[in-house]
Length: 185
Image (cartoon, rainbow, N blue to C red; front, side, top):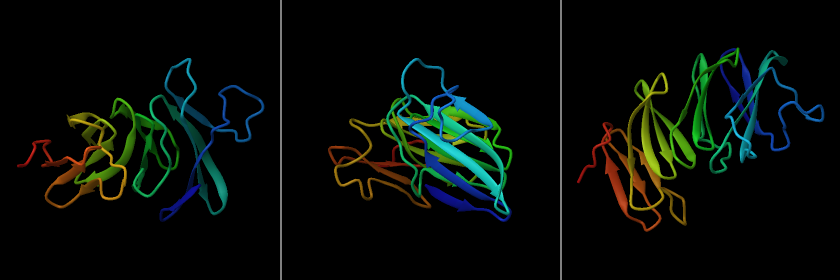
């Protein structure tokens, strides 16, 4: 479980692998359910709860098809009035504190590993694609490589600097992109 704080709220985000929509046996109950339409089991299901002064305000659960993801330092962005979260192949954007779904975008064909804020947009480190989304979730550009964008060591396989994006694929090939998605030589 990850805990985030804003000026007014505490936000808890956690994996809820046992949640089944419509089941009376769920450990956690939620105000909102945001799932892809699918007959398959979701590899990533995350519960989100927003508290003010230790009082639960709203709760939501999200799930998506694609590769499994986890909650970590760079899988979520908390802004003043909304949160963005990587969940399988999708980026979800929910309002704070109401947790209404503002938008969701499939930003990779398999898995969205990380999300970074860049000016008024977001850079997504996906397994197959590096993407840039605008503030409304529209894909501005996507780039792929010869192999998946991760390495065996994982450390430093994706870096966003002030001047460029550096991604490394499975075969340790390096890709340097500008913020318009153009490969820099």
